[in-house]
Structure formats: C-alpha cells, structure tokens
Length: 302
Image: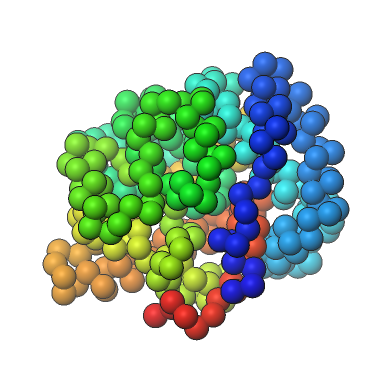
C-alpha cells in the first residue's frame, strides 16, 4: 500500500505547534487564522500528497474537478479545526456556537455506556465537550499512542483528566475487551475512530462514494462483544465559530449471540458508511483523510 496513512508520520513541528498553541490560548482564533493562511498556502504548494488526496476526494464529493482555491480551502478547514481543538481541550468552548442534533440519545442511554464511532471528519473534540461538560458523561478515547504522540502530549497539557482516560489502541485484544467492558459497565462512553484500520487490523471493503474502500472491522467486533449501543458522531464545522454536532444511533446492539453477530456487524458497518458518506457529501470540506482512502490491496480484506 504505497499511500497508506500509517506510513505518514504524524505531521507537526513541535516548536510551531507550541507557538500556535500559545497564540490560540493568548491571542485567540482571529490571530491564529491570520497565521494559518500563509502556513497552509505553503503546505498547499509544497506537500503534493495532501493536495492530490484533497483533489481526489473533492472530485468524488463535488462530482466535478475542484478549483485550486477549493483544495486550499479544504486544507485550511483542516488547519482551523485542528487549532480549535486546542481551545476545546483547554475548556474554552464558550467561544463557539454549538448546535446539537440527537443529544437526547445520551439522556436515553445515560446509565448504559455506549460506543461512539467517530471519523477523521470535522471535530471529535466539539462532540466530546457536549458529552463531558454539558451532560456530565465520562468519555474514554481509544488512541494509537505510538502513532499520535503529539496528540497525546497536547491532551496531557490541556486536559489532564481526559488524558488519564485515554486507552492505548495497541493494548492486546483480550485485555482491551476487558478494559472496555469495565468502562461500559460504569456507564462511560468509549470513543473509537471507525474510518481507519490500525496496524495489521483486518478491514472490509465497503461501498463508499460509489467505489469500494477499506473500513476497519475491529471497532465493530469490540462493540459486538460489549453489547453496547453504537452511536455515530459527526462534528461538522460550519465556518466562523459554528459547529453542528450530529449523534445518530446505528444500532441498539450488534447481535444477540455469536451466530447473528457477523450479520449484525455487516449491517451496522453498511449503515455507518452510508451516514458517513451522507455527511461527507453535504460538508466535503470537513473530510480530513489526506491520503488515497480508496486504495487497497488484496491482503487483510475479507
């Protein structure tokens, strides 16, 4: 897989990241935006891989060839949402207008514990704010710590409570299932990225924008073992300081026993991919997988 996302080192010069974090916390979003415009333009000009991936995705989503400024805007949207993450983690959510759809799901499932399936689409941090601060629901995040050291450092600096709840995605299978079942039993929400497979993780080809794309099965197998409600989350950035949070129930539980589990997983994945495609088509600038999402080889797929 030549253009696999796992081969891409986590982007971000630590000094520049530190500087931008300071600017975001001390000078605000306006100052950050002024800095981001030239930085992203440099990135647009000189990082061909991101530019090509954006063009490929936008061609599918817009059903036409995107203009150069649309590709630039796509990359800039990613940068703005990434910087907003700093403010969300630092507890500055009052700076944003959050519109919530489907929040009643958390009232309904308050004591049950749920699996939240997110994607590299829009902002997961905006959604976490609604769960943690507005509803007082504990959220645990499954994170590949080895692949995302900068992300973990940022969380540890700005939100130590969240950092303590991060679960390493590379925890061996049985231990991970046990740890997550304890979280669910306590009524916690477990956030998992459902659009990219981890290292060596089995993927299944799903129809996505009219063509097969590999989606990981692991998060679905975990959810079926946990027998917890599965909720899809989409935190759409609408420009300015506006975010719309969408929570959608995918399934109450994935099968009742081993026999119907595989069928329930297949159905759940199909529903999830349809909803992800719907939101990505509506708001294409929020799509943040800057690699060839549809590229796959014959290994690891079933």
